[in-house]
Structures are given as C-alpha cells and as structure tokens.
Length: 363
Image (cartoon, rainbow, N blue to C red; front, side, top):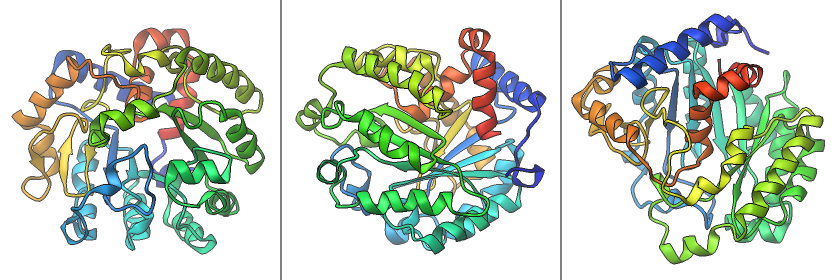
C-alpha cells in the first residue's frame, strides 16, 4: 500500500533522524533542520453545524481562501523543510473542488496526505478519485452511533452518510485506511462503546478520542455552552477509555496512546502533560495562508507575503515557538498532544515498539 513514490520511509533510520532533528530544535531553540508534518486547513467552510466546533461559523472564506496554485506553491518549501506528511483539514476539505488536484500534487512530489473529514459529502466515485490521487489515510468524525444523538451533536442528519463513506473508502482498491475521530462531550460520554461496536465491523484501523475544547480555532465557543459540553465525570470516562483501549487492541484496532488516556483529566487543567512540539514537529497553515506553530499563537507570517521557509526562520515565528514552550493552556487535543507524546523521550524508552508503529503510520 506504500512505496518510496508516496513518500513513506519504512526504515527506522529516517524516523530516528527526524526525531533527533526535532528534539534538537525544540531543546536548543535552533532553526529547524526539518519539520516533518504540516497541518493544512484548506477551507473554513463546512457543511456541518457541530455544537463542539466554531470553525464553520466564520463569515470569512470563499474567494479569500488559498487558491489551488497557492497551495501547490508550498511544495518546494515543504520539500526543503523535509515535510513527509500533509494532514488536510478545514472546515470541511471535501467542499473544495480542487481537493483531488491538491492531493495528487503532494503525492507526485513524494509527500503523503491524510485527510480529516466529516464524511457527509463523499460519494463512492469521489472516494475512488481521492484514493487514485494518492490519499494515504482518511480520518472521519463520528460522535454517536445513534441517529438522533448524532444530529444533536453535529447539527445535521448525517449518520447514514458517514457510515457509507467509511464503506466507500474501504471498498477502494487498495482500500484506504480509515480512522475514526470521536469528540468527547457530555452528550456522548455514556455511549462510546456503541460507537466502537458500530465501527469495528466496518474494518476501521483506528478509533481515537479527543476531549472537546474551546481554545485554538474553537475559542469562539461561549463559556456557558462549553461548560455544558464538557464531560461530566472525567474519572469514569478515563476508566471507560482505558478499558476500551484493551478491547480495541485485542481486535487489532489502534487508539490513543496509553499515556494520553492516563492523563485525560489534564484536558481542562492549566498544566503541560508533555513538552509541546508545535512549531518543531509540525506547523499549521490555515485556509488564508497564515503560518503558525499552533492556532493559539500567531506568528504574523503569511505565504502570500513570504515564502514558507522564510516564515519558519523569521523572528516572529521563533517568538511564537518560545510562547509554545512556556504554554500551559488546557490542551489535550489529539492533533497536538499525541505527536508530543510520541516525541517524549521517557515514553519512547518505555514503549519503543508502540512509538515505532505509530510513526510508521505517518512516515
């Protein structure tokens, strides 16, 4: 399913090399030799109306978003920075007509692509097009196994469409690996096992959980709404997820790291679970071209004004990374916390094979 052509390094030495480069940059505050991952949010538009998300409610977008040419113009800079994976998100990326073209452009230059989607607008033919273009992995949001509960959380009656999308990607030749993203809230904390039992027969390879949050790109959610969305019993939730971790392993389905689940209660505490690697392991580029270590800290750089490499090496980006290193914002978002755990030396020493397997998913 992978080859040198799609940018996947199957040997351990490239992983070790990337780890050393990221670790040195993070702990010596030197300019990055390489940044292996880019989170590229190609649109702020969305066809869901999730109570847990504020992204699709933006009034900005459309013609102001990056064009196809602007997106593909990032590739030389990405190659110079040693980017191996572009994780495409939004908004909802399938709302862009040029999605296939963007994925193909990355694939043709040896960069793998993952996509995060709500799965509402994917037909069987679109799934095949995305697979042929070179999509490596698709992560699909699914917050309930109950149709009515799904609609309450996601704002649309879309459960059947999501289940069909999973089947479409698994029916491609070869099948596209499917991961399931579950946002943990008070609305679904007691029905998580139902989600798992629904997804297991669909041949998904990963089911991961992330607590609802109101920072980074979701900071516009009001405090009252957020307080109602937070899981009620974090201790019980953590025990449930740790038990499900064991059950999923027996079924050969990956989930969150044990470390992530053990520290779930830190999701709403002003503490740093592990040293953050935002700006060192990965950078974010939003749909308007802004480049930042993390949505919490803007760097002032924009690809419409400067080249990607120049932004990464700029004083503004360096200052943003310094803020990341001292940040104690409540943050246990999967996209930020799990990569940091994977680069946390004590955890690597205790779980080398797990880290190796997790790294292979990306590189």
